[in-house]
Image (tube, rainbow, N blue to C red):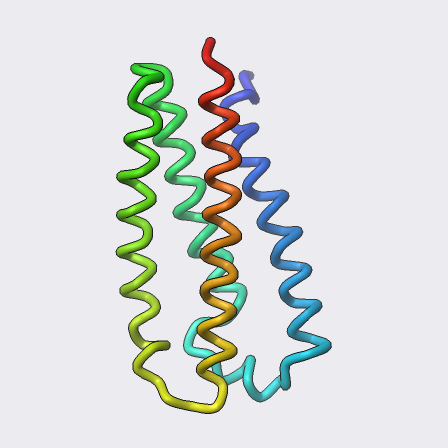
Length: 132
């Protein structure tokens, strides 16, 4: 069984779990429990959402790499833009809410978004550097 195909997904999973544990630890110590319980999207849901889309993006990039390595960068930009649009649709209810917890939830959403974008970029660079 060729596990090299799943090496990128494993990287996303491990780095995502590390980020999730750190995020939950910070919330445990610094954010009131009432704020976290009142979030529109829980931290767990955000990490699952971004892990799913990041994994899907990387799987598509792996398939594109097999056909044409020159198209990987353009595909990454296209899929990342699409993911941003979908993430914005998820963000709209948070932006519409005007509660005391809203700034914390916005910051949490953007931290998770940027964290997974960084992971995707790192994995994509590794895919591009492995021109075989």
